[in-house]
Amino acid sequence: MAIFSPLFRCSIAACALAGATAVPAQAPSLAMLDRLEKGSWQLRERGESTLLQTICVGDARRMIQIYHPRATCSRYIIEDTPQSVTVHYTCPGAGHGRTTIRSETNRLVQIDTQGIADGKPFSQAIEARRAGAC
Image (cartoon, rainbow, N blue to C red; front, side):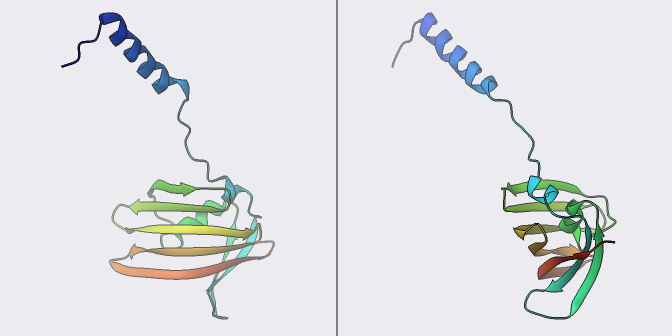
């Protein structure tokens, strides 16, 4: 059994405390979404020519909840990099989802989304492209 002096124990505690407070935690920013151009975006299933929907994007975070556009949801950010974001969200009484948005340019993104909406599962690979002004 190792016995440490009170001074050594205090040093360990001081180092642990200093390490815990030296770098404040920062909330993820989803900055990649802020770089996307505002305006009208066309959403198509990846590899298909049929238009799924057109949305007016003032805040690209709207693309996170394509299947829950008006629901008030809590979000948990899984990944936040300069080229990609992944968010899990839960909408009480409406369902939940997990969406990954990968930026190719500030006018073209790939969206992979899956979850439950209105009691039914969904899973879709979408290409979203800026089409012009709203």
